[in-house]
Amino acid sequence: MFQGRQLGYWFVAAGAALFSTKAIFIKLAYQDDVNAALMLAYRMIFAIPFFVVAGLWAWRQKQLRGEPLPDRMTLLKAIGTGCIGYYLSSYTDFKGLEYISAQLERLVLFTYPIFVMLIGAAVWKQKLTSHGLLGAFISYLGLAIVFGMDLPEGGSNVIIGTVLVLICALLFAIYQLLAKQFITVMGSVLFTSVALTASGVACVLHQAIVSGGDFTATSWFIWMSFGTAIFATVIPSFLINAGMARTNAQVVAMISTISPLVTIGLAVSILGEPFTLADAIGSGMVLAGVGYFTWADSRKSKAAAKVAADPMPASEPVLR
Image (cartoon, rainbow, N blue to C red; front, side, top):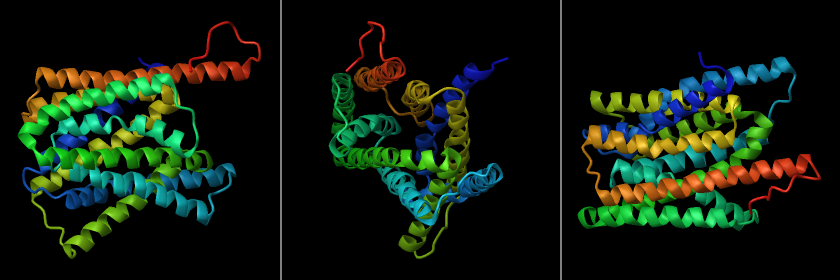
């Protein structure tokens, strides 16, 4: 039997693996109809009820514990933040998958922690570190290799799709930086519920506006949307939260590096996407760059916490 921290590792690994199936479900749905807005709308239609229930439960728990409830302005800001992360970001991601492979999409999206680092430095004046810059260089060099391999065959589609998913990664990085303050005030479950529910409503309204209210879809498309909602959104969200409760953010970040590997394996085996030696090298570099950045940042955080707790630390140096 797995207990405590070990169980947390398995929860995080399972959540990361399920999140990785998103691009596969989308690509399978696109075999019937290449329509990002419709796919996103159906995903959220199926997912919203779960997050509404979770949000009501979290709200009630706050009341029972006598904790202060978020005011109207906090809720409005949380809604806006959620729409950045799960409406605008998700739409550019789903749209990007109209043009590029599931493998390339996942690798591009996986670089969002580097955007977090760069935006944090540019806006919040956070210090850029040598390990951060080295990790970014390795990752984007690997991404350039995969991009270069796909470009001759895909042409302008590869450029359009990659740019769209890069915008997705940028928006999700902004969402993560903004979300921290609301998670602290509201709690992770309540904030996630508010963010996902609001962005879900935005996604459904988007489809209603651009299509004139037409939600017609094949049964295959709807089933793939259901799979995206339940197996690539709802279940992994709760698994990651459960894993986070038993471990910490650094563990989640490290274990989540399996995500692109799972996507690549599924894309090759289910979608029949090619995987060449150059793809392997480029993918390995992306994983290595982000993995190194996450590992080094985790060690730096632990060292900083140790210094804060002990004014006279041992001789072990703090990574910079």
